[in-house]
Image (cartoon, rainbow, N blue to C red):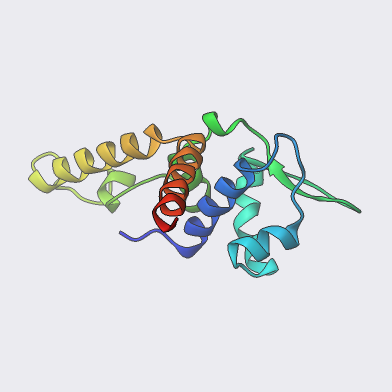
Length: 146
């Protein structure tokens, strides 16, 4: 399983918004420039995030985007599910009528365990955690270069 480019850019954009001063509206052009994304693609990736209440938008002169929730309350799982829907590793985990082997299939149990573990890991990391990690890595690289 590979996450989509939209999800990758959505995570990067939410991290970028979390790095801005609280309640500060960020212009679309600034997000596009810093995240190296086209305006059309940014609109596409932000729509699901707005729909689920992770990001909010302000229209008109001085309009743009900002986080609708505290970065401590937004997880990687929230963003992944906003962009891609419920996390499901196999069709048999989506619909029990897809496969008649669920009652005895040993792979079904593994798919379920892997899906549960992955969801737990993604849910463990908030955007605030990722901002902190990124700052630490950038400081390390900066000090290493000096």
